[in-house]
Structures are given as structure tokens and as C-alpha cells.
Image (cartoon, rainbow, N blue to C red; front, top):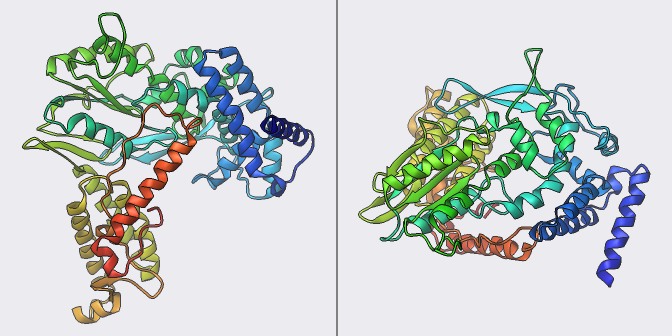
Amino acid sequence: MESMNAQSSMAHNARTMQTKRVKWKDINWIIAESYVNRLQVRIVKAVQKDKWRLVKRLQKLITNSFYAKAIAVKRVITNKGKHTPGIDKVVWETDEDKSKAIEKLDTSKYHAQPLRRVYIEKYGKKEKRPLGIPTMQDRAMQGLMLLALEPVAETTADRVSFGFRRNRSAQDAMEYIFKLLARKTSPQWILEGDIKGCFDHISHEWMLGNIPTDKRIMRQFLKCGYVDRRTLFPTEEGSPQGGLISPTYANLTLDGMEELLLKKYSASSTGYTHPNYNKEKVHLCRYADDFIVTAENRETLLEIQQAIEKFMEERGLKLSDEKTVITNINDGFDFLGWNFRKFKGKLLIQPSRKSKQKVTKSLSRTIKYYHEANQELLIIKLNQITRGWAEYHHCACAKKTYALIDHRLWEMLWKWAKRRHPRKGKKWIKNRYWHPKGNREWSFRTDKAILYQMMDMPIVRIRSLDLKKNPFLDGEYFEHRRKQHKKDKETAYLSSTAALSGYEPSPSA
């Protein structure tokens, strides 16, 4: 009874705020998130019971809610692109701007503005990746629609989809693949799948016909066009990269691939499907538009490739002929920045060669860019790279790789120091930039900053994810899992030699 009263009270507060101007500082974010989360949970339960009319009503309730609009605006101003404007060159900086932005989020009168086209470099390639940057207002509207769509996407998603989803990560995908391939009886053949220009070629007709969301608003997102060199171009296909809601659109488009394989290779004589009922050892793992499929033999994977190509064709997509290959586990394959390969029957997961080259190049560029900067600023910029890269690979067999990258970085910094002081001797340079720390003689540091060495990152295997858990219904499970992994990392760190050096663990540990 108390719960119902609290819910009705929050609903009343939301309606009251909707009718009057509310200052940004006066918004109670705890109440706002609780109110929206309750509606999202109701959407999840409605989807599970196939009550799609109720889903539609609840989605409309969210998109018209003051609290949801406030959360959508907050998300825009707290992400990495908060200082990056769209074609209108507007950036929300003051509390007044944010309050006005909430008022302008009206789904009944909304019209999307064209995207601002920019190009970013692709590693190892001459061509650049096109990105479409929406205006701040369009980003907020995408965030608002995402609040209503995400519960549906999480409930209907493939179990083995790990990219751009709540409480799932690339490390979870790695652990899942390890379980699939580590045993002696595991499948030996892998189909490495890559979709050619996934975000750029998704069929608008398919999305409008199959994604349960406000069709008018969705059409605005998809058909808004983009401006490149002061010229307006229409968008007839694809979901623009750079939008908040685009990854969810892509996931919803690709969902169903697991069901396709289950029906064909995991069905009993009575028609019942289960992943364990699988003589051909066919399993799928997908992260966004990258995926792998395992099988007992090469011929099965050739059949699967044809079935997936047909699945993609219905959605306006096509597999890349260059990147879609079939390999044996003994030869190894790269996926999500790791190399998976068996050596004498033992599966090892290590950072891929491409990933090592990429981080080395990134460190080199940073040192060259800050060649005139003081040591403290250089350390701060390098730590952003070393900590992030080490954190990403901390679940893999990466100790030797960490030592290799640390050595490469030391060589770069030694050259950097020698160039700054060409007339000084080696001992002077060493005493100027490298100082003892704990039992470590060479530490690149100042009184306020110290270079983080990757070797200090403990290797901790992530615990297996229960694929049936829903982030909106099983919040306690995911919170417990997060805390447990944090505890595992702290335990591993305290038992390592790094602790003896006087170093503090990573903030994200």
C-alpha cells in the first residue's frame, strides 16, 4: 500500500512540475530516476507478457514525463560530447539553458534538424569514418526516446549480445567465448563475421516496421539528413553514427540471429529448442555489428554463413567479404581487441597485435604532441591511455604484453628527455625525471604525479554472466556482481608485487 502511495505521489509531482517552470537546481534526481525506473520495469513486465498495447501506453507516459525529460537533458550535458555543438552551434552551459531545454522536449511538435557531418580516422586505413553530430536538442530527444525503448530492447535482445547494453561489456563476451572454446571437446572452427557498413546501410523500412517505438519521431531521426561542407544531403538508409539511440536501433535490427541458429541446430524432434541440445556445437557471440559463430566443422559454418547472409539481406545489410572468414582455433582469431588461440590444446586469450600497435602509436603521438609540455602534464595525459588500456585487458593473459608496452613507453620517454636536454649526461637526465618509489628505482614522476605502469594492473578473470538476467528486474544481481569483481581486483592487487612498490590501485578497481 505504501509503495502504491509513493508511486502515485511521484506521478503527481511529475505532473505538477510539468505545468510550471522548475529551476534546474531544484530537481530531485533520486525521485526522478526512481519514477522513470518504475515505468521501465512495468514496460519490461508488459513485454514479457506480450501486452504490446500496454507497452505503447507506458512508453508514451515516459516520453511525456517531466522527470524523463530532465534525465534526458542531464545525460546530454554529462557525456563526452557536451561541448560539441550541432549545426545550430548551440551548447547548453547555464542552468537556464537546461531548464528551457526540458520545456522544448515536446514529442507532438518535434522536428529533427540535419546532422553535422564530421570524419574521424580509422586505424590502419586511409578512408575516414563518417559521424553525424545531432544538435543538443536532438540528442536530448534521442535520450528521451531511448528511456522508453531500452526496456524493450533489453527484454527482447539475444542472450549472447553484449555490445551497447546495460551491465554488459566486452570482458563478458570474452569470458563467454572462453567457456565455449576452452575445453578439449569444444568446437574447433570459428566463423568471424563482420557487417559491411552496418550503421550506414540498415533499412529504414525494416526499422520502421519492426522496432516498437514512436514511428513519427523515429522517422525524424532517420530522415533528417546531414550537412557536409555547407551542402544538405538526404539520408535514405542507415542509422547515423554519433546519435545516442543509434546503437540500440542496431541491436534491435540484429536481434534474432541467435533464434535463427537455435531453430536450425538446437531443436529436438518435438521442436523444443535449447542451446545445450546442439550436436554441431553451434554457438553465437555478438558484440554490436561484430560476431563469431562456432561449429564442429567447416561445412556447417558455410551453411550458417549463407543463412546469416539471407538474414542480413532482409534488413538491408551485407557481410563483408574481406573480413568474414572461417578459421581454426589452432590458427587463432582476433575479436574485440584480443587474440583467441589454442596452443597444444590450451586456450590463451591475449591482446591482439593490432591492439598493441594501436596503443603504442597512441602513446607515441601523445609524447610528440606534448613535447614542450612539463613533465606533470605529460604524465596526466599518458596515464589516461595506460590506465584505460590496462583496465580493458585486465581479464586476459596480458602480463607479458603489459611489460612490453611499459618498455616501449620507457624508450619513448628516454628519447623525449634526451631531446629536451641534448647537452646533459644520462645520469643527470635520470635524476631529473626518474626517481625511486618504494622498491622501484626508476619511476617517471614528479612530486604531484607519477606515471602509471601497466605491470601494476592485476590480472583478474571476470565471473560468468547469467545471460537470463534483466538489468531492470535484477538490479541487485548486477550490483553484487560488480562489487564482487571489485573485491577480486583489490585482493589480487594487494597480493601482487606492485603493492610493495607503494603504488595505489586504479580508481576503477
